Length: 184
Image (tube, rainbow, N blue to C red; front, side, top):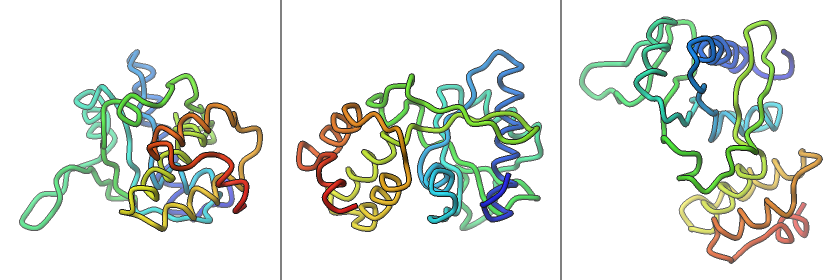
């Protein structure tokens, strides 16, 4: 792997090992979403502080994390939803059991090889753009438009019909692909 900051590469490698272990156990590995997926697809143009993951097998996933040296932070003032590893600068957190609350097509998930460690499942760029546009449209995160534009501008071979539908769903029909094309 090259192009990403060392902390991100280390976290990707660890996620690939955990995902491979789940696969060996006959369990569907988690899907990387959120800022981790944005950093992956933008080759580090956007950085994240953690890996948000979606899995319907949270207890099984967390057991595999523990087996790979991850621990939950404990103590006053510490968030206990996520997991940390002593060798990693990024935490891992399960943020849901269904990809974008069931709106994303799981068939669109990309499988990406991460060196010798194995592969990881990553949310489709199209769904990630739609999610970012939805956050932008809500008014709660105006900076997400820039992430959507970065993803759109750096990606090739996108399913524009699917992305149009997903952006419309996420933005209550307020935005579509044309809004990205006019700005990119």
